[in-house]
Length: 350
Image (cartoon, rainbow, N blue to C red; front, top):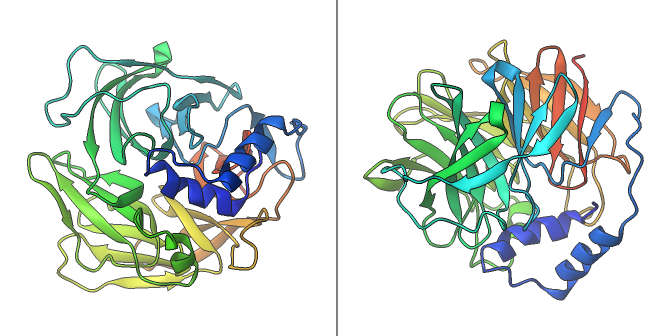
């Protein structure tokens, strides 16, 4: 499944306007369907798990026994469950729970049309994990599921609809009260939003959502294309990727304190905690002249205290895999997702 970077970015805007696809995006989607399959054999230091469509984000579940992955492609499976040991996967069986969570009151979505973007997971009891998934089909929202990995199923229990005009990207749940922070990547009313991000214009922000209180903006989080986000273990700090600004910044959640940042040489996409307490940041080498091509990509390790950046992997664009968006570590293996394509990649930890 290949798709141009411009078309994939445009989809985020178009999905927010009830799938009003332009002719060029419709053509790209038709070409995706007709494209011949690419070999699933390893290439260089990358191995592949094929058949996982447009897994833009993924996260370990149950200490790495499983990985849950989304599918940014509209009308796809919604969520995947990967077995990292067996190197197998399956679409999760989705259903609507009999009782909705009182904190997440909204109408149930059409589970056959989800477009799952950024993810968050919160461990629960009895083998149940709460999965938060950003959705762009039908509404701009955070959909909430109770995942039973052992059964390969997930029940929808509610959602939180985004403020009007906001296309979200990533989210992170706070450690205590069920609140979450979510990034605004672009304004759905801005027809040139993606071009503005590529020019480094400030258009994004982070919202804090609290049960029963709704949304408010987090001071100090205005940036160019706010993208991946994490919350510190104590809930005091947030780490955010400014995709258009080639910057990773840290800001106090309270809004009182200094914002610090570090530059990287790529467009940083998602942020994920590594087992050693550092942060894995992954993104693409994109500029305004290369929007319609595949892109090389990098993953780096970020010290959450000093913001020192250490390279981890740097890969060229391959026909099999390009434009990585996220990296998660399970044991001594790194797993990579991408917004484009028909597979996820994995390799031994360098």
